[in-house]
Image (cartoon, rainbow, N blue to C red; front, top):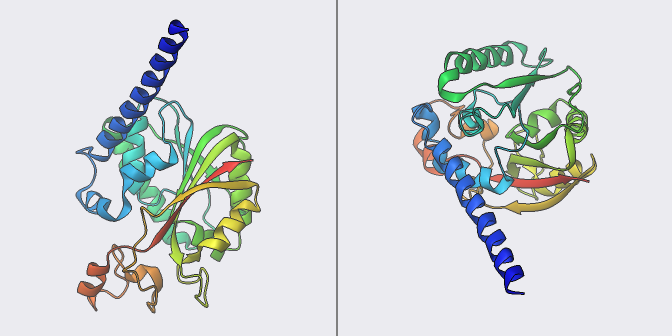
Length: 265
């Protein structure tokens, strides 16, 4: 009996030590001195350490980041996943909207991370086609993450396609992490200004085969008024109105965001 109890205690201690060690590695990746200074300044709004811990980032998992943009999260995740051969990003093979700007952003993304491969590690890419579908990689990933992308998927009327594709790409019981600008439930609009209603998005993603298992308010911002003529892009870091009312928007900070964790059923 004493041997079994000792074994159980040891197992529990090892489990929590692993969690602590993993959290420390994520914290180190967030603190990576090679990150761009302008990116570090956004940490106070985006809470990367807490967010990645919440989603269960782990070096042993096969991880996919969807449409990484200019690589704000990629700088952190790639540092953490360095030398694992487990980190991928999904980008448009041929953008079907905002072609010029998306092509420019993606080219600059890969130029930057290729140039700084010794700092951030190797990043593998897979492609999203014009129908917003990922080809191949069925039942491959343990964790898929998408940050502030869903309003674009919805606006292009391709959201069902990409979320079904993500479902196929995940292993059974794989995790999907979603961070998205959040509209008020009483709003007359849904995703036209970059904001999406949380109840709608949960239902929408669950209709593609997922199940919500947890959510957190760590990326919420009650200061966000959500009534701007130029939508969510009025707020930092975009400042869509230029210098007009800039100090007001700076005081608000970034958007109010939902942070949702789903499992593949």
